[in-house]
Length: 187
Image (cartoon, rainbow, N blue to C red; front, side, top):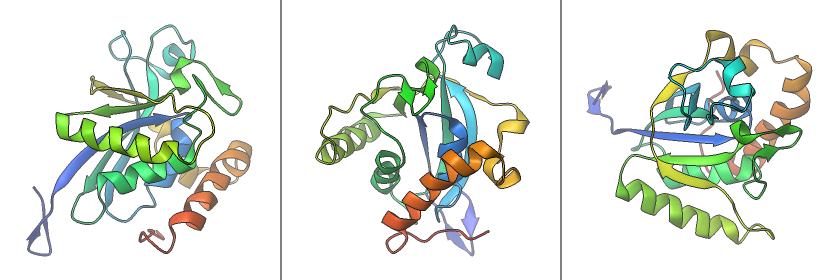
């Protein structure tokens, strides 16, 4: 536990994939209580995969974001509400134009309590969708950090076409829905 102004913070971890990790990381990096949001790869067979390996679809990895958060500031179910808002959990192995198992909707859990919270969040979110949620829920495998040029991609490249066309609308959707309920980092 880290000290935060003399108070001990309750650090927890959530690893999830909802399509391109640039999108997911850009949103979660704006949530108050999120200490870090690191783009990476998880759930595949190859050790130390590269972006090119993962993009081929042959490794079985998903693009994920490894989130560390202060559970005294934001709870896991709140983070999961965001997750089900910023991507479509009803599409198998794709988000928008991104297609392949590397773009699957997935949530990894570390223990039975996290699994229970995830399953409850899926049940709650299902009411918002006409199609069945196909999000994979699996035990947390090893997570490999993505290459440095993938970290903070939106913050470093806000005017890139993909950032403007795909990531920015997800951030706006997040702000529209949660802006009054969650503190949003303004950097």
